[in-house]
Image 1: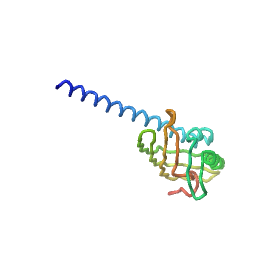
Image 2: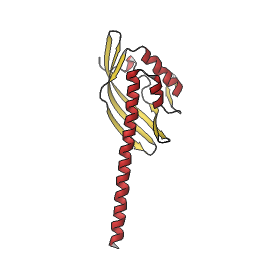
Image 3: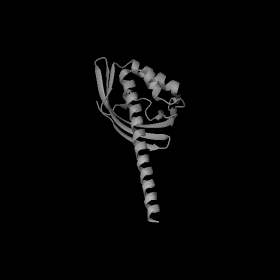
Image 4: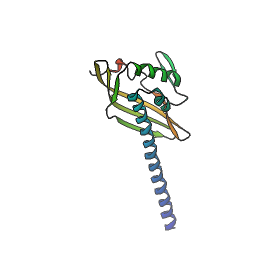
Amino acid sequence: MVTAYKLLAYLVAIIFLASCGSSDEEKKKINLLLDKRTSAFELKDPEIYSECIHEDYRATSGEGVFDKHKLVSRFRDHVSIIDTVSFGESERYIYINGADARVMMLSSIDVKIDSYSMTYKAREVINLSKVLGEWRITKESMLNLLSGTMILDN
């Protein structure tokens, strides 16, 4: 009887440790995706950015509904007028629920256009879904991440 309880406790501990490990592994994968997204901004590369976005991306703004194609097009337009953009170390809070995740990020962003430069702080909420073992962004809280309307401090 005692050995059955020990065996059950052992199995519960293994399941708990395995689930924690997989959560840590999933957080690493999400962080890699978010780092890739940051690189897309810094390199001003719409192809890299597009790879981060889920095929079924849909977001509504005052300008209407944005699908993946429209989002990537907007990204291309925004980065084309910017000379450089760089991100400071961001704080990320990742919450995973099965095949869905939500990330809250606080970032410092430096943007230079000609001789004008600005630094602003961005607060984002990014939703992700896992499809075929890969995480992709399904919604970003800021469609205008690089626009001047997001400046909090100059």
